[in-house]
Image 1 (tube, helix red, strand yellow):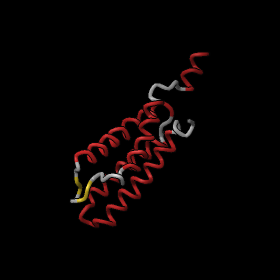
Image 2: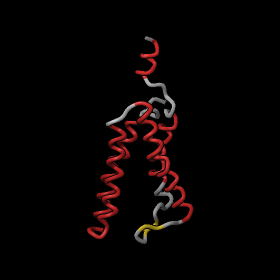
Image 3: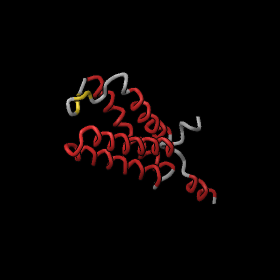
Length: 127
């Protein structure tokens, strides 16, 4: 169960994959015609890196839940509705199972740690 609570690990995995595979893959597939989408993928990657490396504890858990939870919902809705991006399916099944799981793990970890006690708060309360 420890790996499930490792929000930082899941955020870093998603950040790297979103930046490299999302931004780089989109650029490799569509070239200069999709620079706005490549920029969007990289921008979201920066938010994920920020959440993974610049905050800790309860704040990190909340960032993970807020950033990753809506993406899981988006994947599921795109799959159910058959939505497309650039003429390709946005979330074809079964290929979308892996992204749903990978985005779902930091979201779940974030929800589980949403109300965690901060170490500094409990230490100052004892003093």
